[in-house]
Length: 119
Image (cartoon, rainbow, N blue to C red; front, side, top):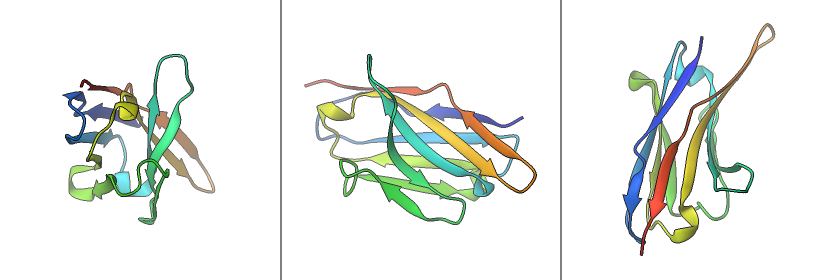
């Protein structure tokens, strides 16, 4: 059974940085499309950044130039480096993994890690 565990959230001030981690167990992270989503109270989860199994990377416009998504196959982990954090970046960050083959489809969510921004 695939499991994703996020870590690295916390309190930061505007302009500071955080690195979030998403560790996968029960599979090989390079087989999965992994994406980071942010959710704030009362709103739906929204995509922030994604890295596909083939290494292709995408960011939403608000994350481009500030956030970097990367993968460490040896640690079975995907990271989200967040720089120049602003108030709009606050929320719970969830990691999502998707694997699709001819024989199986897997979708798994982590439980999230909280990012708080204080002025």
